[in-house]
Image (tube, rainbow, N blue to C red):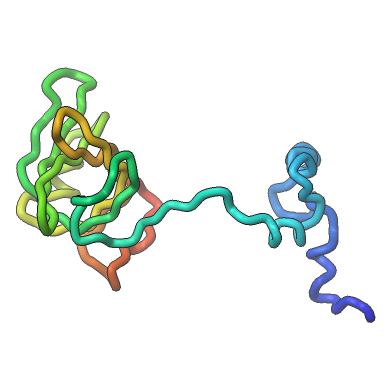
Length: 155
């Protein structure tokens, strides 16, 4: 039984893939990936759950969480290089979004007070406050419960 021609690229060397040269191919070989086909059978080690939740209550920090919030007060950094904070409220609790190196009016433009936003980021707990440090995603509207893909992160 012979292989169909459309499958031939799967059995070529790893160097035939765009962006994979001799150095990368050598690194891949260390984890038993010598052909593109081998990548199909290599499972990811971890994943990030970005399922939309109603609230951050019940989530054990540190964890990545995605929640729809109402934007509250903005608190500028107390000192140069310090974090700016934005108080937000989800369906059941209030917490802070923490931003390092936020420039100018970036936060007030992207997180206007009183507006609803979907945010996603690492949830941490510190001094009794729940905080989401450096949210990775923020969007204005819910789209089937998922934030639309973005090539820009809020930092």
